[in-house]
Length: 110
Length: 115
Image (cartoon, rainbow over all chains, first blue to last red; front, side, top):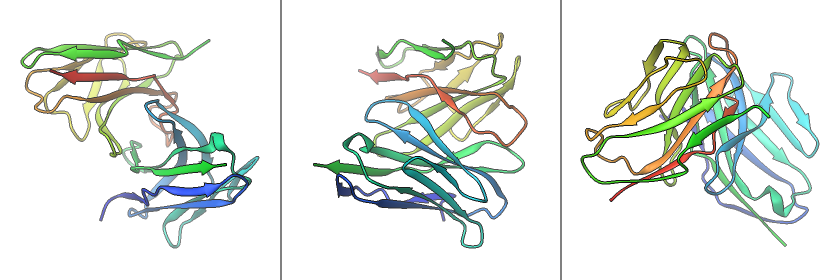
């Protein structure tokens, strides 16, 4: 089983839709969780951290479910500019070296 | 503005040649990282450095070498021993070398193509 798994998609949604991605991780000792956004042929950029209590930033909400070992990213009122690949990142205690998922592709169309 | 710079943006290399990719940061971050990304793949860690004059191998270090003589700089050399070097190379840094932080800042990347 891969350490961090994401559905590659693509998720194809109309503007204004709500879309959610999940990311599962295999190591129960994982401690830090993040979502990054990567545009085509560009570098990843930190979107938000994921805290145990959840985290909301405008239209974006991230949640952590330790019991089931997954994190989620919810995007409300999708914009065309939200089209990108969303990378899940998990850091496991001990090494503090993060593992990146392969990403989930989102396409928002008019 | 602080950030990470990588050069060159595009690099072409003939088989059998060594090439060095530059990475400089002025964020005063302790830790620096090199990743490789292939089409449709996630980021794979090549090398990382948590402090000056120290670095560790990542998951795919074979065929690569690094140095960390200065806090700001972490150059990556792709040697002729690397069998499939064509890829997108990303340098990153993070403020906390020993905590649970994650690379927060990435450079714009270098696209290496072997001809």
